[in-house]
Image 1 (cartoon, rainbow, N blue to C red):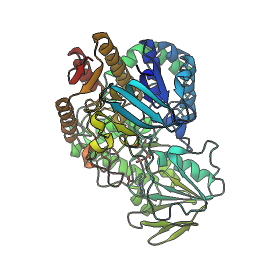
Image 2 (image 1 turned 60 degrees about the horizontal axis):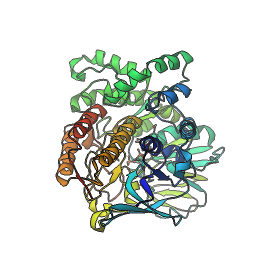
Image 3 (image 1 turned 120 degrees about the vertical axis):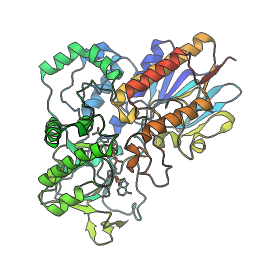
Image 4 (image 1 turned 120 degrees about the horizontal axis):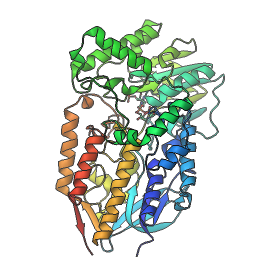
Length: 531
Ligand code: N01
């Protein structure tokens, strides 16, 4: 007999919905969450300018029409604080809080071959047993802190974007360094520049940055969407991106240069990373991709007044969209300010951090504050830092030494009754992640119900099904331009991490159809056994 049917690790979007869905189906469930509140990534990412670049009307749960109608988003792209308020509202509305233990990190998740139960140990000393464990730990929740010489000797304030102080940081009149120019850096740099006396940005790889064109939502717009939510959500579930569709022409090469640029211009003005979906072949055909690359490079040169800075900000060497396109507000314009300097650390590398600031090969900079916008050990980091041991005590970390392998991104051979939400091999980070989370949660919980109804106690992904899924994920990725960039999708941002393309690129609709077929074939690819 176990303490729970289901133990969930993490109380973000996935963990909260899991509590609700498990309870609805009569399964006892408990969540352990390391933070002092619910919200997952939205609990931690409180840096200036933090907001979601997927529109709030879509970046929200669809499983409850009541929540959809009751909650009203105020901005096109919601701020971190609004998303956190939303998740707190959901937790209260569905009375989820009593199933969640906060301030508690799970340290060990160990399978007992004899009893077929999982033992889940925490840093508070509490250990519980459970029939099933669901890892809802998020794709971007373990920070990537560069191991720079002297990093701990700095006398000023030092912060990573993914664990921001709750009281905020006052940069007024300060000398500030930001290291990293991904989505987090791009959002915060313009705001820090407004307050700081001096801001120095240390850039390793320039990214393509497009405008968010964020704006308040009008009551008419919200009412209209709310009245059509059911069909729009259905469209999202079967789309590529997890949002309602938009008009996409087959190839950028079918149009003249002026027609193409007119379409790009319209999308540039509308804002959003969706510019890479202007043509269906932008991420599969290098020549098509080059047309958008050139359009965006011209925008940088036109916006940034100093030609040398503009050139340093201009990305080369990878297709646009193969690394996540960053969505910002006045990002390039910020480099026209007198108090902002851009250091290209590819030509002038950081050699050390010392008590006063940062030393590069060519210069020394003194700072009051250093911000690390250096990203995450994405997709596998949060799973590998927990001691997860499956059959015969094999550690997940060791099994994944050469890269993660999963079946559907949801289960791992050798780890029976353990499931992943948005695991490697799922569309997760290449989609509106909330749409993906909902599909995964429903698949997993329905599977548990099926097991109980059929008298099965153990479900395990087959090795051959897993191998076939990994091969499929790779084949599809290789038919696109994604693998041509050194990105966190491939693990390239973390020194020593194996290079494996982790997300599933064929879209949430195709993925859902495959999962539906697996269900229709009574969970093909899983071996299910009775006691
Ligand atoms: O992290 P990143 P992020 N020395 O990995 C640099 C989501 N997100 O937190 O490119 C110096 O993209 C690194 O350089 P390089 C979104 O999915 C969404 O910004 O590796 N620099 C890069 O410039 C996003 O993609 C939203 O050469 C170092 C930067 O740090 C994901 O989170 C907002 C370095 C890291 O960029 C991650 O975004 C925020 C080193 N040792 C985040 N190591 C929205 O919804 C790394 N870098 C808008």
